[in-house]
Length: 467
Image (cartoon, rainbow, N blue to C red; front, side, top):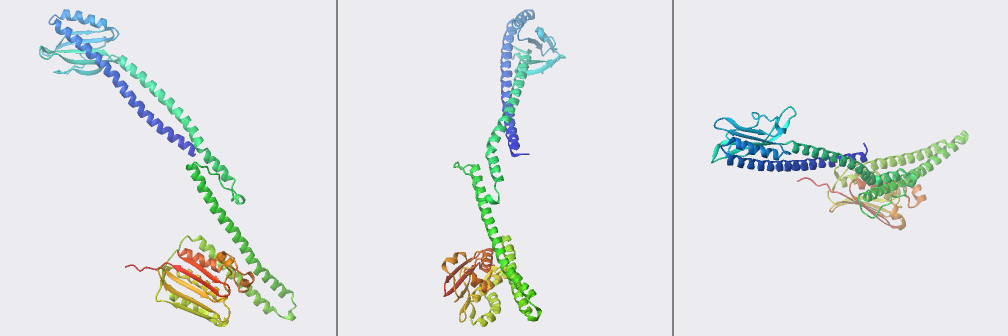
């Protein structure tokens, strides 16, 4: 069921319920007012007939003549007259208009003793003629035993209330139908901007992600929806551009070692066996395979990190012990290059993190520091505790040019293409470092001076021991 149909149904149902309640309320009050007006008229007739009866007692014949004149005079409103002796238990006089011949005095409601006027309704005859009665004492002091009952046909009131009910129901149905039609028009106009948005979004493709929905100045719900969609398209655009850039960079990075590997193997195959060199070719091919393996491993690692919104597991990690453990393999490499490598820790510093990811983070930082530091240089890793866990990796290497600093964390970026490739890098190490820091809700800063060295500072959340 479409939103348009739902809105129309809800609108129509609400209006129908409200209209039904209003119609019932109005009908009830009008019908009550009509019945009260008829009762006032009947009460006036009762008072008049009671006065005639008292004035002519005990002459029943005279009472009959006077009452008959009254009944004939009110020919448009048929009346019923009954004078009952409660002490004797019999009717003294019963008179009826022509249209009230079906009224049986025996069946007329008469509850004794009667001390006040009581309005009642009774139905008589096969046609179900409705008669409204008022029963009361003729005179409590002068004639306490005589009961006077006056009735009047209630057909006119019932007919008018029936007509009123039918007309109000007809009006209600017409109003509901009009409301449904109006609701459809209003819903269609209200949803027209949504339909336009759907049409515009249907035209958005990968090549047109730079396009944006037009936003009005009213600040209404539709404009806020368009703004939200534009923000979403902007994020998709950035992600798509990043994906395209990553794909192109990955293809470029993979093509170079694969081309070198293919070329070297072709030379080895085409070279006569007598000239030898097969071992050198295989050794060089293995180096290229190792480079490819490292590149693919880093790419897969970054892909997994991008898919992880947060750390799966996190616990206390002793950063001093972790850095000393990570630094051991680099000591041999540093000695071979004539570099001094030291790890310093100011007391016990425990961070909240995942050991495997932190090992990769600081391993990449130490690898970069040793790789780009010349003979006689110094690499220092220092751990200290402040309001966070602070790890500083400083080297006295070649440094980074100022114009390259804003891009060092970009994937596949090399500050110096030839020098980086000679060192075996693919431009993913610092990207991995930054992503791991982000997963740990930390921060990383990098300062570098060309020819003097580079300093990287990583701040990670402290592990707080519960009290």
